[in-house]
Image 1: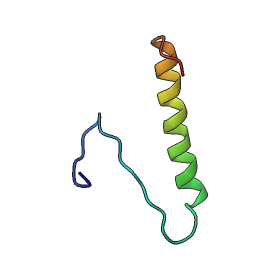
Image 2 (image 1 turned 90 degrees about the vertical axis):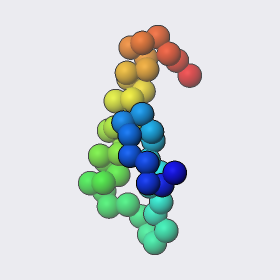
Image 3 (image 1 turned 120 degrees about the vertical axis):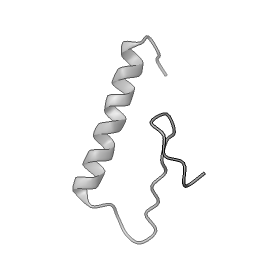
Length: 46
């Protein structure tokens, strides 16, 4: 499953040595916020 690249498949990023760099973390967090906002716009709440 690690090799599957598809827009509807979530990719898991592992950080085994230290933290993510701030710019990478910001990018991923923004994508997460956009996804939650999209779900909310479609009436999906958690």
